[in-house]
Image (cartoon, rainbow, N blue to C red; front, side):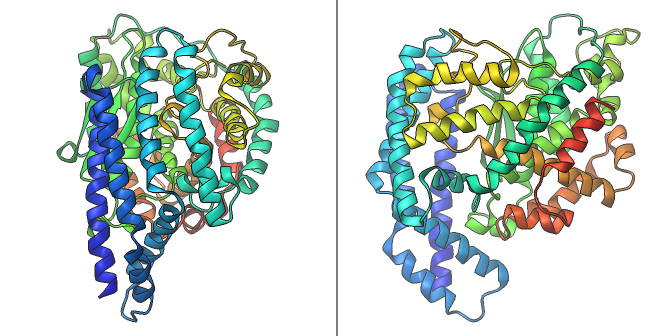
Length: 494
């Protein structure tokens, strides 16, 4: 009966996580400014409740007894493994530290929302320092308990089993190779025609929802809203996507939505029979990011998708059928334009890993105590000049304040974006081999076969296997950079 006790207990934990996710979504979408402090307290209390349940001493006994039960099936045994992992990590961190981190990160993010538009680094420095101090403390607790270096302990929370030992050679290869790819892509590309007109927010949202439906997003189990920063949150049967809109550039928001739709399709495709259990949750965040980048970069920025989508975009904004700006060819030039810039979320996929490398290097130094908050702007500017040739001195808004991650406590998350891009390229190669008419299907707007392939290969697996195991099972190889680099050369150089 010990396994049954674990199952019921963690179903209750899942309910608390759902409440946390909904309060966080509401904070970003609906909450009035005056509700910030009260919301921070509510989220801190829920973080404590979830932590207390996961770290309960009885869980350890139930785990030991469940392992002795002979009739558990492979999914149940995998669930016990995931529960034990969660229990060990929770036991390593005091409940007061969990609550304090939640409170500090919520308040820091609220300050960031108002300070970023004003380019006001001084306003955010103290809240960020408090959040980072707590992140260092949490990293030290986890590292001591799990036998990991502090930064690896944080990284392991987002991508189980991942470490700098694995990541550093990958990033070193990309740092060595990408500058040449960038130069070749810049030389090969043709300038696009600008899209004509102003683009009303309501029409942008209608367009986004149309394409979300075509990709397979279930609006009976999810919705699209507006926030300061695009994200996907919630639970598998209650998925929330948000985006932001630009009246001058409708593709900026559209591709953000398509990116988040990749996340959402993963959540909605998780194994229904394991709802609320750790084994039924999504895998590591590198795998989650692979699903968003698979959909946005591999599929939706490709020529086949744009042949399907071009008339839909044109008609959504009342474009002229004879205007070449609305052609699939021109949209492809816009979607695949390589242009070193300041903003990570707007970066092309050739320069994007260099943005991540900068953040990876800075946050390692922050966790190690080798850098303070006051050092971030100078380090940021030095890295941007070295990697992308851009001077960001004095520009905090579109420099170190541009991403929400550090301001909401997501220290150690950034490497998963690059790992996700590598995984997405390998998975798309495998899908193209398994689905010989894939290009034609995408060009027709038929995504059912691809969606079912993803569900069978990735989504339905949940956490019964790790990211590297899934990559090997689906592709027959190990995680690496070659498929990604080959993809860049095909699309951007020819």
